[in-house]
Length: 213
Ligand code: 0O2
Image (spheres, rainbow, N blue to C red):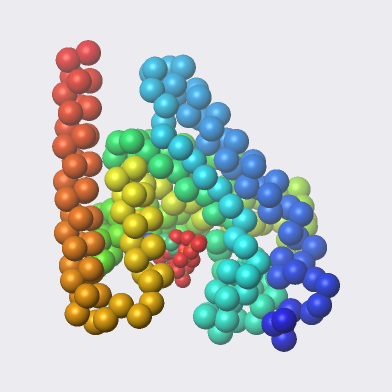
């Protein structure tokens, strides 16, 4: 048991019950927008969407890593990824379309952006991250009602997502000898760059098809 978390409570405290509702709300808005886009253009906005409330143990571990007490205030105010959504698109330009839709969501402000597509991480990671602050009918951890909750949204193409999932598996592997680890990092980076080049080719093909239409 974590000494900062009183027994019989979880790290999200009484706010736990709202987190899934907020997740469903934002996921539902994105699915509706995709359906509307499909009716208008014949194409969905994204290939798939996943959402999760960060598991309690992962949140406690993250608080520890950030030297924060494992409290609802840390989990829901100091950290911003208790509610996380990943939108995976087929083409790169759909990422900008989804961002534009999110920018126009009612009762939501974008409070942070990280563009790892234009500013690729040294290991090759590519993705676009947004932190939304959503106004809800619920009380929040700061004592406000209506309260504000953070939602992290990650947007990436199928190729970027495939790479991130592979890199995630590799980074969890311990006891790799340093020489092999170095080789693995180089191969992963090369693979990320090749996939990025495929994304550009796919986009070019899509643009050419659209031009013809
Ligand atoms: P989970 O289980 O995916 O939620 P931090 O949250 O401390 O890791 P920071 O700066 O607060 O980092 O946030 P950032 O850079 O926006 O990244 C947060 C999330 O992006 C991570 O969540 C991963 O999901 C993803 N991510 C970032 N960098 C990488 C990377 O190099 N490789 C892969 N595969 N994913 C990455 P969590 O908290 O790690 O876990």
